[in-house]
Amino acid sequence: MPGLLSSPVCLTVICFLSWSLRPGCAQIRTDEVSGVQYGHMQSNVTLACGKSQIGVPVAWHLNHSSALPRHRVTPDGALVLLHADLSAQGNYSCHDDRGLLLHSVILRLGHNPGLLSVSCQVPNHTHVRCSWTESVKTFLPAKYNASFRGTGQEWRPCVLDLAHKHCDVDHPAFWQTIHTLRITESNALGSETTSVRFRLHELLKPDPPESLLVEGLEGHPKRLIVSWKFPASWPLHDAFPLMFQIRYRPQGSVYWSEVFSEDGPVVIFDALAGHLHQVQLRARDEVNSDSQWSEWSPLFVVRPWEVSSTSESPEEQPEERFPDNFFPFSTKPEIATAKSHNSVHPEDEGNLGLVILLVLFSVVILTTVLSLIFVIW
Ligand SMILES: *[C@@H]1O[C@H](CO)[C@@H](O)[C@H](O)[C@H]1NC(C)=O
Ligand SMILES: *[C@@H]1O[C@H](CO)[C@@H](O)[C@H](O)[C@H]1NC(C)=O
Ligand SMILES: *[C@@H]1O[C@H](CO)[C@@H](O)[C@H](O)[C@H]1NC(C)=O
Ligand SMILES: *[C@@H]1O[C@H](CO)[C@@H](O)[C@H](O)[C@H]1NC(C)=O
Ligand SMILES: *[C@@H]1O[C@H](CO)[C@@H](O)[C@H](O)[C@H]1NC(C)=O
Image (spheres, rainbow, N blue to C red):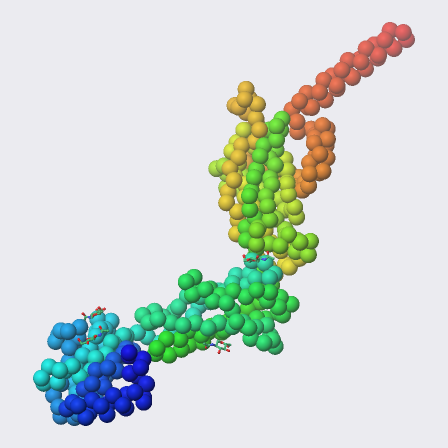
């Protein structure tokens, strides 16, 4: 019914009919054509009383009450709300001296949109997500429109998700150095366009690596094996290698030790025997040195393997000692090499004993041989 009534032809017909049947056409027209009026907050807002004639006294009501915010009424019956604020919103109606409704309007107050603050995330080479926050609270429903392009290219839409205030572009032209995003916010009072320019390769920042797992190695109280998965949002493709940075420390220490690797698992050789360790890692595009490191993965807390009887490990070393000798080995075959390498490793207490025994034994042999030679001589 209201849609039908608002069409000009119908209005004219209805107006004519009611004019011939009733005393005032204006009353009916203003009665039917009620809507919403938007105003600027903290300004003087004028509400017209439909087409009421000059000199005819009118009475204004807000939400059916005659209590109005600070105002004045002009000679033609319009209501001017002075310095209107949010509390002035509501349903305004004006009535003639007999109390008949002449006109009603819903008043909503707010501000023009302001510039947006925009930030973009690039978790891989095929995806850009830009999110925004408003610098001005408008108090009014807003519409957005966003588009995106590389230098010299066509604008293409950035697909909006209004609930989360972000928009997405798939397969941006990564080879273009500079990209521009344009977001327009508009509401009943106006619109504002925010443009931001950025370099995708500098914003490239993978999500943190996933499924971090750190385990002790049986028989090796100073070793930890670190494994993980690529971030799910990073394509598993040779064309996009990642560099990983692993850091670890005994719980309570302030110094981190670091290992870099292109692939997992990685063996840590200098864990502090018998102590809990914190381990975490992050990733970065290996080729593009302008890109950013991911956030660190959540901490993984682990204790190296230990013999239950030697849980009171005598191996108490100052913290400064362990960062300087670590041996990053990255792949499984290399673990095997590391193991065989271990048999001549002087750090292992058992092997040290064996070496001492051998030396003692050779000294004894040497002494015996020397004394024999001496006796014979
Ligand atoms: C609003 O109206 C008052 C009274 O008429 C006037 O003094 C004031 O300057 C007006 N303010 C604005 C922003 O127009
Ligand atoms: C009038 O009613 C509207 C809608 O119910 C409400 O939001 C507004 O606060 C009311 N205004 C006043 C002054 O009571
Ligand atoms: C506003 O008030 C008028 C008069 O009381 C009423 O006829 C009209 O339905 C109201 N409008 C809304 C949207 O509540
Ligand atoms: C949104 O922006 C695009 C490109 O700038 C333009 O073609 C389109 O008309 C805009 N849409 C609206 C609703 O403003
Ligand atoms: C790139 O990241 C987006 C967002 O996380 C994801 O939806 C998309 O599948 C990723 N692309 C590839 C090729 O993994």
